[in-house]
Amino acid sequence: MPITPSDALRALDAPIVTATGHRTLDLTTGGENISLAAGSYEVINGGTVLVYVRLGSAVSVPSSGAAEVAGQCPIPAGAKANVHIPGDAAVALHGSTASGTATIHLVRKVLPS
Image (cartoon, rainbow, N blue to C red):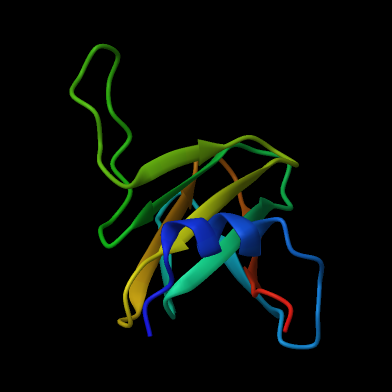
């Protein structure tokens, strides 16, 4: 059953419970991807360099003043971004680093029962 936007926001604020999931993905400048089930995730940059993540397509860093790139955001070193995948289908999360390597942590949050 699809997650409503209000439930997605509540899930991201939810505490860690036994149904919480944790995965990792090692990133390089060449780009990597991982399939994520529908849900709400905290994406934590565990590295010391800027990373980019994008839903459904490879990362494409825009040049200054260029059109926006849909479904993408930068995550500074040590920071996190909230990602929501609606519906029932899995979506590929693509990621790459601005330089060097980094590991991102993907924490799937759920509403406590």
